[in-house]
Length: 321
Image 1 (cartoon, helix red, strand yellow):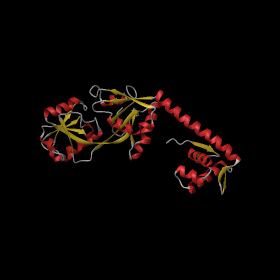
Image 2 (spheres, helix red, strand yellow):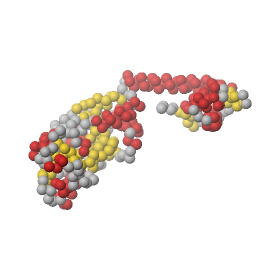
Image 3 (tube, one colour):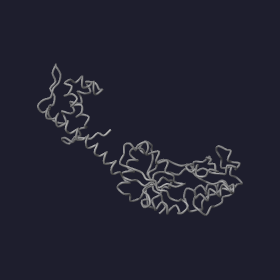
């Protein structure tokens, strides 16, 4: 609920106090006013004492027959009514303007970076921010390298949802974290491991385990080092490309085990994504330009204030540039 404040003598006066004061004068009785406001008479009396203290003059005269305004209170009553009406009109005009001249947020979406997560989040808070409208902008994961895709943020589109790695070597974009993806594996539905609900690393012994080439991702390089050091019986194969639909197709055709993310479980209908007994994760969130427009800044601020504060998330930057 919108609750503007009026400054008086360096203090903040909430409109709730003004509304309560008007109700008291209209009712001519603290008890009747308290009943309409669904609070106790004692609580309402305390509010009136606070109001008089903030204004600095006596506004009410209390008698055995009820309550009435002082001369100062009468002036204050009329001005307070006018002020509240002005506030209500201002809110209505602002909301009308938001619908007439909305902020357009261009959301990049692709096979490996779908925007469903953002849409689900925004649905829960969008009613509080009618000034924002979204436009979906499809882009092709296969046509550009990861760094190139991330450098288009703020150009071809304003924001996207994606996995990223923390780092401080780039100011090309920023990330508002919404959660974490778990590193999993994906296999063909015909693969013997496809029947399992969860896998141990030893399940990969003797088989082909596909990773993207070294130097592409520090996190994946960390997994590579762990497998090579602790589980040399696993035959690691490098794919020369980043994650593309062709990589998933080859996994399905060759029967290899491919390192992937649980957030990509719906990428290929002929593959099954299975969790692994390890703790490797990667953050994902809203990615936006390192130098965002005012519109995007307001959008991200709305997400941060209304959604992200409900869970202990962090802000990070991808280290590609």
